[in-house]
Image (cartoon, rainbow, N blue to C red; front, side, top):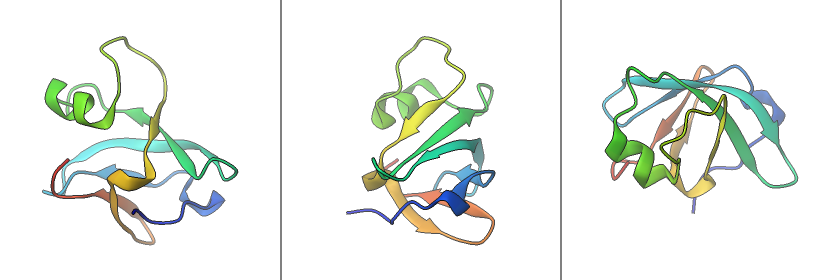
Length: 83
């Protein structure tokens, strides 16, 4: 079970468990409890994209599953260790 997603998450950095930025939240759907991320393609490895369920096609934003989130802070959303 992940963290609750609110409209306040828009604009926050998304970081992996090591603190590397992998993208920025560009949209939030509170009805679906989902943040949408504009990924940093240079930082986002194929394995991580696969674990997050993000395809190999280059989209402008990808859904961030709630269960992938470890912590939501004032400035960032951090992914769980297994991601």
